[in-house]
Length: 495
Length: 129
Ligand code: SF4
Ligand code: SF4
Image 1 (cartoon, rainbow over the protein chains, first blue to last red):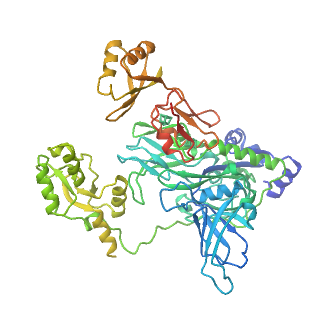
Image 2: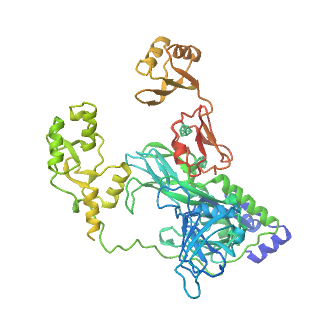
């Protein structure tokens, strides 16, 4: 048995024994008692994309004073509904609503790098705060405080993702090839802080950590903390002014948006044999589920279980096939920061703290309460679909389009099975190129939807494939309806 | 085994040059990638042996042949060695080294661009020839 005070005394004398989380299993297996008494600190950590990150900034008062109501930093909106000149910049806020690869995470990185940030602020003006507009530039040094405060950072468990659908998906879990051709996974396995202290024995409120290359703290459990299902997480705080740009990197996950790659190190004091045993966790003991992101619902199907030994090997066996894997967190930078943390402790720059309060070991996050049920395709689609056969002439199809005021016609066979689709644009193409057979201009790979699919998913699919309508098919690929963007908008507008 | 980029100009785009070269040389050329437009085309091929002879025949047929060496560049400043690109590369050209750094085998790259589109740090760029 040791106390944190004793460990800190050893640090002071330069005698503390510090080992990395991946070195601990061997030391422990060799002699558990000796491992517990001789090792003082096990370093754990991670460097990964942490979307739920951001920073509170204080700009100081202007003369005359302003109570900011709207604020943009390098054109990225920051929340300013907290007093007069405070704001919170969040990592995933984009410069424009979509199609931007610069966001809050980059503003944070630019601040840490010492770069100048453009500030644009608006206010309505009051007797005490008359100023209505500010346009200026600031650097990190100009700010009174710049405090990183992350609602949800270190997770107990991370996911692995694959995609069973037949189109490529760009997700927060990276780019997922169609037909389960790759697996992307987050997390660093045996190095992950909460894999080494799953019961929150030593990690708690007030634990000093290495955040973004500076000293920081665990401030409590994170939002959505769900220890009941093994999905707990932690909230962190640190001073941006002391951070190192190496460990604070804005990124843009293609098709998803911006996020912040952040380095976090958590030193675990080895107070007893039980704690030593837990830090002896190996990659093969850290398990996760492979989840099928091809199904766009809240509860996505689980395809199988894997451990980090398998994930880091580069290939995982799923349903008899070897699938290639991609990590999303960086092991290289994680090792780098663990080395730096160890050096800081050795140089007596970093002492450990005990927790002042425990992280809740029970609880489960709920899903969002929706007032209305999810709308599905069969509630909006037209059941009377105008269709045609593949041998129809241009003239016949054109007449159908015009007389029915529609822009597309599904092409079906004798038993109503979908064969293709023709749009008014295809007709124009046919005329321009002197094509007379409709079969030569129709699109054969039709974007379809199912009767019971949620409208949000169908409208996302139409958006992605740039189509204005999709035939609704049953399980035999027979056309049972058609749903257009106008149908969906009408439904949404009526609520 | 080396990879080559073969470019067809509009004059030759409609002739079956690849088939002719295969028949005449007897070398089984593997097509790794093809970009075909109505007035020009380019393919990336693997020539398993007798490279000189095959290239000579290609050149005589009026196409441009270039050895692919520096296909892709990884910016070491931007790359964070996450590995998000690894599983996307169709030829397995991207790999981890001993210390978990990312390396690209430039000769294995067929310029498909998958890693460029997937990288969260914009660290990969296809090199112009
Ligand atoms: S995805 Fe980009 S940042 Fe990550 S290893 Fe590949 S090149 Fe580097
Ligand atoms: S462009 Fe990237 S993904 Fe494509 S072959 Fe080259 S290295 Fe591989």
